[in-house]
Amino acid sequence: MSDTLEILLTNDDGIDSVGIRAIHDALVEHANANVTVVAPASDQSACGRSISHGGEIGLVDHELGYAVEGTPADCVVAGLAELGPDPDLVVAGCNRGANLGEYVLGRSGTISAAVEAAFFDVPAIATSMYVPVDETPLREIDLSTDDFREARRVTTYLAEYALDAGVFDHAAYLNVNVPTPGKRPAPIEITRPSKRYEMDAEATDGSVTLHDRVWESMDPETIPDPDGTDRRAVAEGRISISPLTAPHSTNHHETLTELAETYHDRVATADD
Image (cartoon, rainbow, N blue to C red; front, side):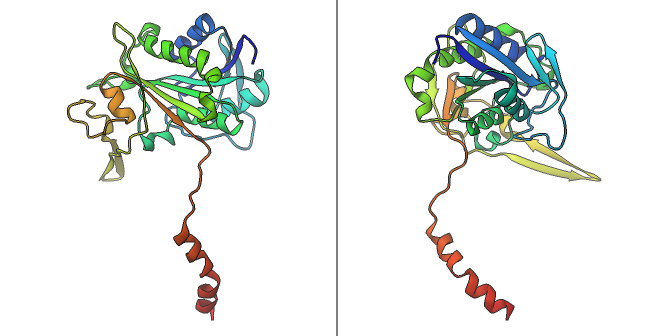
């Protein structure tokens, strides 16, 4: 690896979001990085690994790099295959709002950008910031680049040191979640994704309303998430880093193997 890091930067909040500007400037200023930005032209939050099919995707120059009329996964494919130099690292974020828990991993566009990079065998960091909400919708909360200072610090630190330390010999990507920044840098905890799931739905005449209740309380005194999980760490004011793998792996399953062995005989008997 050269002395200058080559980084592909993307997000799912859109190229004009405050979070991507904060991370871009920090990587350029403090990580000795050449940063190529390829990010969605508009907000693509919660799009997962959706990818555009069957046609051209709009692409325009932007002061940070390239704005793509598509998803974060589109941006990673375009950036790695065509628009940028071969990167040492892909960074996604910083996302406005945390990405915590197993069920969020497949839904988040930020995480999905990191997973897409893994299929190219490029290590990745996905960074998100927990933003407390009450009655004000998350998208209406006004944030400045300074509000992302915790995210800037830890993302820059990992970009500078994780590759040479061999972190990505054991992880395809890092899911990083930072708490609301305080006066001093928060401590880091290596975590696992919480298994807590609190989606439900309510049907009324002609519609169904989905509720994600997992965000209704982040009080560390009352949340049920155990020690060692990402939600517990962030709720208690620590930076959560979950080292994760991709693509999905399979487990040896003796019962399924036995069931498969009886398939032919049972189906043939049923058809007789």
